[in-house]
Image 1 (cartoon, rainbow, N blue to C red):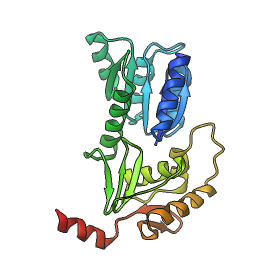
Image 2 (image 1 turned 45 degrees about the vertical axis):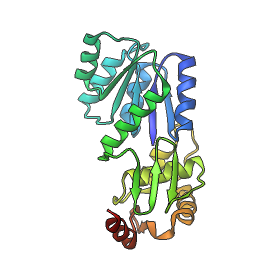
Image 3 (image 1 turned 60 degrees about the horizontal axis):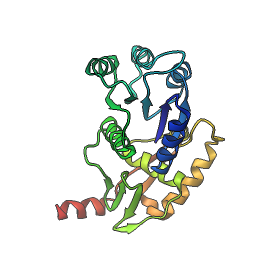
Length: 230
């Protein structure tokens, strides 16, 4: 999952980028409202963390323009402005959540997970597909109770496929959501990562739809077994 972090404080930006990367996210950073506005309109993010007191263009103006341009990406406002009137203004501008500084990083990550779940139509805190399970809180996955050893990119790939299971996802879409802006992107490497993940979770779980992309599906026998248990 790819996140846009909009924050002008260098120290806080570094801390948050590290925390987000450790949680399994690809992160792009914008230090001012002008760059944030451009990135939000030209890059496909899964969520945005947006400060309000920004140089060049303030956060509320950036958010209002995004929403006028029909950008539906979930936005979490992160700001020192804690007055109720400013919170109302943020929500009315199109924010999905609002967190005031100072804050605990774990709360920020929890709110971000909730935004991502809701935007993808999931209610439960963990993702499952038959015996395949992924816990975004711990950035861990397992198959039939056996933990999976995944690299950071393998985890991002599996996370994105599970968030959108049943839908055909193109290689281009995967590239856009797995890598940050500075990464040397190559859609051909997606096939390599798909192959690696298949070996770890079972080849029948990721279907290749020729000419279109990939789709995560649940084996029929595991669906039946899950139904029997419930």
